[in-house]
Amino acid sequence: MKVSSKDFQISDHQALRLLEIGSQLKLIREQKGVSLQKIRQITLISERHLRAIEEGNINSLPEPVYIQGFIRKYAKALGVNNIAEQFPVTKILPKTSWLKSSELRPFHLYLIYILLIATSVGTLSNIFNPAANYSSISDSETQLSDAARLKPNTKGNTSKLVNRKEQTVNKPNSLKPQVKTVNLGIMMKGESWMRIEVDGIVKFEGILSEGTNKVWGGNKNIILRAGNAGAILLEFNQYPPMLLGQVGEVVQKTFNSSYKPPNIRLSASSLPENLE
Image (spheres, rainbow, N blue to C red):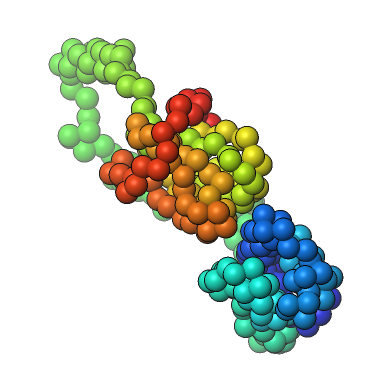
């Protein structure tokens, strides 16, 4: 948890979301050829705050509720909708001191003192008289039952059991190689922020530049989230390559063994086959 110099708290989740949203807005602005000065004139937001949003510098911005308002005005100036809601606004929490709730009263100290004395007496008793722990065990308790005693004719049976165990241990196990059932390859046609989750584990999160090729494989599913879907050409399993979406569009898709692309948009050569 990060805490700014002001009287509100900023979480790592908010910082990551701002970095993602800021990179999307900067990419869309540059693609449309709009300057920061023009955005400042439209939104009446200072250029310093606009640049902090694009760079994900959350410590240079005011409270989260104002950051969300800045993002909404910035996105509206670029003609982008439903992006400000992606930035979470947390409730301001009052600062509390844990010392008051954890104070030890005299009664508590008295109980701790009694427990320490009891523990010390038991430890000293075991050290100076170790045989006392076994004095209460009677001879009848140490006798084996008739079922637990070995009879003279069980020697042959024991050897047979040993031979069976050796056969079980020496028997080779048939190991089958694991084959990935979900394979996803991407080819970057532009720059975009991206997050890849394979079988519940995040394999990549960051910004990929134009010309980058990546391939992932999983056994259950692959979840892809991107901030500029029009810059991503993807190939899933044996289906032809296709664009993930439109330029500047934020898209999240889940790929599994039963997924079928709804629309084949492009035909291109296969992407690299080496799995990460």
